[in-house]
Length: 453
Image 1 (tube, one colour):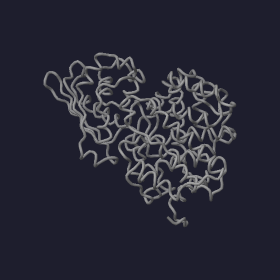
Image 2 (cartoon, helix red, strand yellow):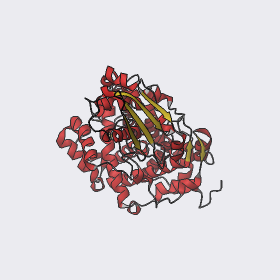
Image 3 (tube, helix red, strand yellow):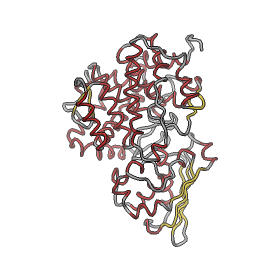
Image 4 (cartoon, helix red, strand yellow):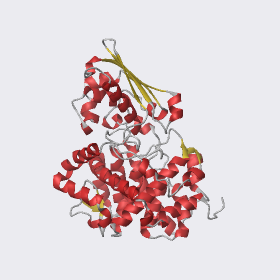
């Protein structure tokens, strides 16, 4: 491909590296602040999980030296490579992080850990960090939207490596004429991820997001040292290796005018996003009942869904991690009740005989018509059959949390409080939230608040 001014890969790379902060629309920056507020406590809770807490301890013990970069949830700081890697893993651990249907993944957790770590390492102002996250997110989302992904590929650790590398390049001030090579090099450093890790409850899947933050920084270091990428690593990787097609035209269409960042979602349940469509259909069915429906009244639940949702059909997840990728479990635990938030998707819930019994009576199949309508619609039809012969029908066409069906701010505030207050106490939780919502006023993000979260 010619490297003329119209070269799409060059356009994407320069978009991150050269767009002035003042050219980013106010509503984009506002959404970016809310994504930060949502993301940091999710990272902190993920960091509490024993395998990751142990890895963090080992990683920081083995590190050559500490740094100013938060390892969120530990109360400690580290050098940028370690902090970005650990925060990325933690942010994906609970499957409670922000995402984007159009982007085929989770752009936020791919770029925030590296951008935050490097900005803290360089003692940069919050205004520059916020702008960098918004621009890098947009590039990740656009590469994701332009790709026809292979179903087997998990999106973490793929598109995000490119966005993470470009974010770091902007923060470190790399020259504009080096960014295209960097994007191509970074795209050649993606992971060969797979969705079976989700179905099998394999937590190595969470490393993939950590790879984005780590490898994005390494790609910058390699480029600075003279390493080169192929002619167009983005096209090669996402049209031949990890995808079945990539459209340069889609990737740059309305670049800087349409912002995919504003078209993403925040989660109210710690599950794969596709399960939320089925949860919405369940709520729709229950809303049609004349009286509250008890789990003991349910004979069977049939779910027809688009392909990515139908992929989450396992009825017996082995542990709390597997619950994130099981529509039968999600519907069963919510119907059985008695637990909310993270507890509804915990090992305690997995061990509950009532939840397990009901999950075995939830059957999920793909409807090819619904798959063809995706992602513009996220259609799920649900049929809930009661033991007395009554049938309740529910449907989801647009999943709650999408721009056309936004969550109430009170629900998002409740999520933040439920996660942040047990971690840091009410006063510090509010201090962190206020600092993130006013991050542009901070002259040095290494000193954003007077404690290390």
